[in-house]
Image (cartoon, rainbow, N blue to C red):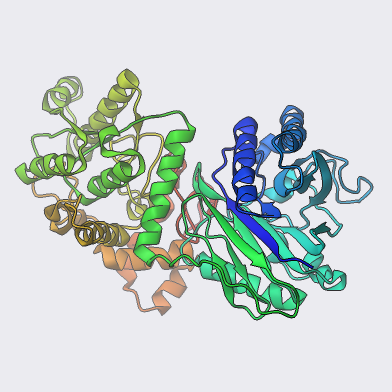
Length: 555
């Protein structure tokens, strides 16, 4: 019995690009073969991209995916890679599994397919279909009910897909009866902070259950509001981490399965990222993926000199290059000199294209017709900035990105359609204000450690935040201090605690009532907010679905 070399190909796929994804499979399979691999495992739904949502229900899409699958099998053989066992994910046409099963419902399946010798060798349909959080698979797929064990170079390899290892029982429990040498898991597991160690601990438990190592390959890259962090790994039967890939980059992780009874082979293990770096890189990955996969080459945003726009611009520069970032400074009669100076300093540090477009004359033109006062006048200034950004976008083809953060989005502390909330993507949508400051400090410290100029002006980090829509305005005039606000929001939004639970925690009743009221009244704004990358356990959007029209108030 020979040593079996496994290659885990954590690649960045794009939903719907079946030809491009198939080409990536061929390219990475060749790299795996050149490295001496006998088996290369790709992530969940490799050929289709993930998640495909209701594309799964479109017959033309399923036909296209199947054609790409068959073509890939043939092209692998034609390229001299026929002996290589290639595991890919795709959508299975109805009838691939047990069509007589009562829960089939006439739906397609989430499928893993083994390709070898120019043909499809085996198909496996995912059993457990998640229907929580960002997942909606039970709606579009039918579950499988058969186990899958394949022979690769004389070794028995069990195959499951993502959620199949998260649920007790099912195909993993049946692997023990099949006496497998290795369990491989194809995954499309979205990133959220702290999830990495949960995956490893789960795989360790499954490795002990089947008495075999577990090889876990995960998708990488941004897809709409989801970020996939890769981080593929192998754990041994004793729970030891035997190999580990880096996060947020495409990577081919190689590992050798030794003969039973011999010491396990230890491969390369990537160093873990610190929490702030991990979140920062997740956001960069999400923005980069959205820009590239939607055909943009550049972004535009308003630069106010404040911390939110400064961090957003730095993220954009890291994602697509500072030369592809357009920042528009739009001072009003209330804008401070230091805000304008900070915006210019930021653009210089990033190498961004800075435009200065004063808004006073535009606001005056509206005021000549409307004569607005108070909040209405403040909102007019904010919306004029949004109009200007969209005009620049329409004229020059940039993607408008919104710098608003999760704390503002939660409380509705943002003018709808203004420069902070308008556009196609919002990098900080799932980052609260306290974390915004932490990420900015991390990014500057990271630059300093590398002998580089910190990208964010220190004054943007240290000065009190303000919308600057009236003289002397500060955020804290209308909101509790951000450290307190974010603590209450975490309990109310992410942990779904009610007023009674919040008071039991010891929060001031006046603060609780103010925050709860602001959050409940702002759902309509959140429904109109751009997409943004999910980085916490509960992000606004797919994770949290509440009615806009509701008379429920916390007692």
